[in-house]
Amino acid sequence: MIVVSIDSIEQELNHAFDVLLSEHSDASRWVVSLSGGLDSSVLLHALLRWKSESKLSVHTTDTSYQNESSIPPISALHINHQLSEESIAWADECVARCAEYDIDCVVEVVDVASESGLGLEGAARTARYAAYERVLSNSDVLLQGHHANDQFETVLLRLMRGAGLQGLAAIPMERSLTPNRDIRVYRPLLRLSQAQLHTYARYHVVTWQDDPSNQDMQFDRNYLRHGLIPLFEARWPEVLDNVSNSVAWLAESTVLSHEVAHDDLRRLDVRHDRWGDDSVCLDALRALSVPRQKNALRVWSQHTFGVALNRHQLNQLVDENFSKLLLSKSQMVNDTEQMIYECYARRMYVHRSNVSASFDEQQTVEIARAERVFIDQVGELCIDYDPIHFKEWASDKGTYSLTVQFRQGGERAHPATRTHSQTLKKLFQEYQVPPWWRSKVPLMYYGSTLLLVGDVWVEHGVAEIFEIQCSWRRPCNKA
Image (tube, rainbow, N blue to C red):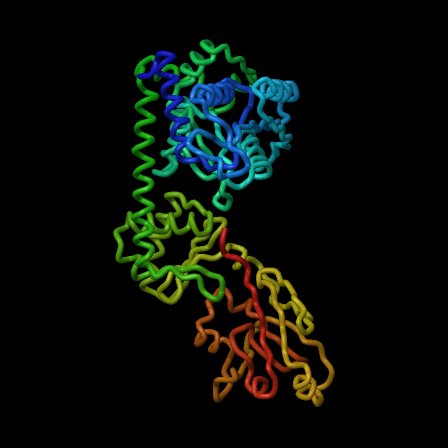
């Protein structure tokens, strides 16, 4: 590593904390994720040392007294994963250390779903981040102790998994905890190696707890950490710095690719239609180069639906679907487990996979006026009408319940705006009802008399006599 002396290490740390102060001085709290290990123990000590040496005070609750010489309150959060017999002792040690530092320490106990299919490390991470969301408040900044060795390990792991540009950008210095929460994650140690953290800890007599599982070579990260990375460092002493620089370039390239994608998406006539489906113009998409087509689809899918398409899936969408769909009227469906990408009327649509799952078209559901009824894969329905005129209209038709039914085939309908009836199949085509919705459009009946077809049209002979409408909230298509 280029940075070797304790002075240089502290200078790097101070710079990272100065950046934190300049960008997040208005945070509610700075919360250190404290495991009790080397990384987080050094992080907490270095942060408090920097605060003391910089003569910074802590914000009061009155924001009018906040200034450039004050910082948000500092606290710690320890996650007890309950995976070791020493878990309680580690938590107690973190609480005791924070008491010495005169800061608060919250201990959150989590259950790790080891049978989730994510592997033990993945399941522990999922439980940990769920705890962060529970405990942290909006405007908090979470400080984590990831360092340059973690960065290199992550790059290698993602290379082995065939990651793309965004994946190889690995661990960012800063990011949002989740897309929907105003909680930032910041990693001040990311430019320092684990060896440098050891140097800092020895110099400042910082103690820490060793987790024996970190030596278990059955875990891929430990295999890299103890088996391969030392070989890289012995052969190329500056490898960690060089990897960090490459990651920074990749991160900038990721930002650039996102900017290009958003520029392209503005030209693709992105729509969220009345059916709850999202689509882009197929012709405009085809006008882009193939790499830009894939880039736009990847960013659109990830940002809109939370689905990260891999290279194979993008190749299927671009290379296979386009050439076939533009030459025929048949539908090509690309199922990516969570979403279905389907082309119709010269647009590429995306909808949740459950939209095309098995559906009971034979079901009949009773519904009363102003009652909200939820039907699986259809959504929430509510019928409202003028009860007085409805009663007059129904007086010679017998006593029936209002029911919701679905297309069986061969039905005819007569929209109020039309002069004659037509088959439901033909009307759905004319009203541009997407093919994957046609079996799920609710048909409202009184006895055997069709009153209205979803929120698409009211039947002739009904609209002229009494007001009736259907409120239909379709299943959410978003992530």
